Length: 83
Image 1 (cartoon, rainbow, N blue to C red):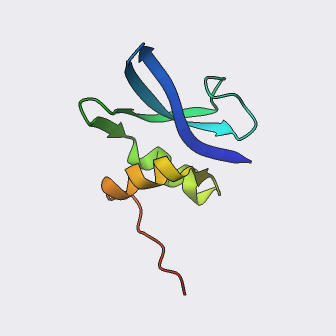
Image 2: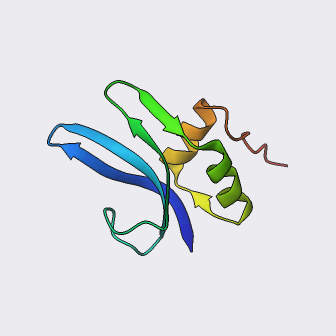
């Protein structure tokens, strides 16, 4: 199953993350299927390729909890209201 998740980059105590599409059994820094953005938690700088993210979400890719919260803050997805 494909997941939309974070891949760590950067130096010790200066992390940056890439937003990637990966198989859920792949290790954290393994080879991604596609890269769709990045996030820097220190400077709060982020970039998300909206077209690629929308395409992958329509194909059934599920975001992790952290990525879901980042996408909510960026107004790229709507919070699902339980019925």
